[in-house]
Length: 58
Image (tube, rainbow, N blue to C red; front, side, top):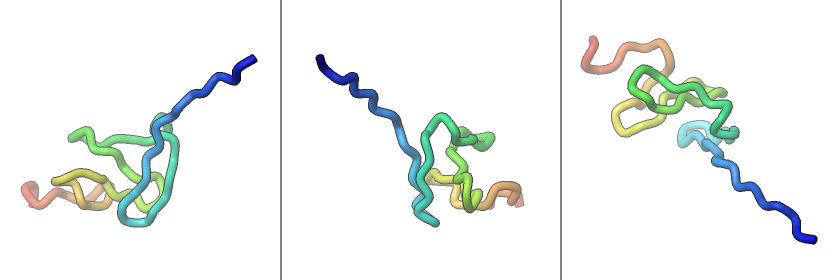
């Protein structure tokens, strides 16, 4: 018998280092993942806390 191997995607925050399964991650309006611990949106243009206005919206 062989054991089934299931790889699951894991999100890791660059700011605080938190890790979570990707199915439990929320996304901002631009589609970037938001860290569940520090609420930082992670992406090339999204280095901000959830709820803050982006640099272009200021």
